[in-house]
Amino acid sequence: MKTRTIISLGMLLLTMSFHANASSSDAWQQLYNKAERTCITQSRLVSPFVSEPVVFDDSIGKVAILLREGSSRNKTFRKNTTFICLFDKKTNKTAIEEYRWKK
Image 1 (cartoon, rainbow, N blue to C red):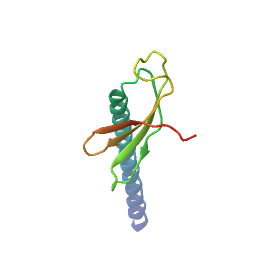
Image 2 (tube, helix red, strand yellow):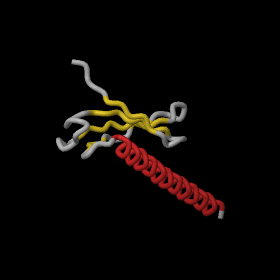
Image 3 (spheres, rainbow, N blue to C red):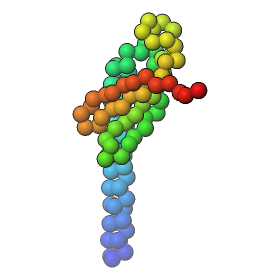
């Protein structure tokens, strides 16, 4: 009887931890999708290439995404113009700036 109780409790804990991780993954994916959509919209790029998100810890509260213009049809930004977008997790606001590599 005691063994069954321990096994049942162990299975319950495993199930609960798996469910929590699954919810966490879904929540992170929703955050990434929202950050990506917001950054693309705010960037005014015609055909952007988008990096994987870089997530900073909670003390910073930001997600960074790199964007690069892939189209030569954009009249505002030439092809391969690159931007960094910082998405604030709490306010959902973005800051976007063009950046260039040093030569």
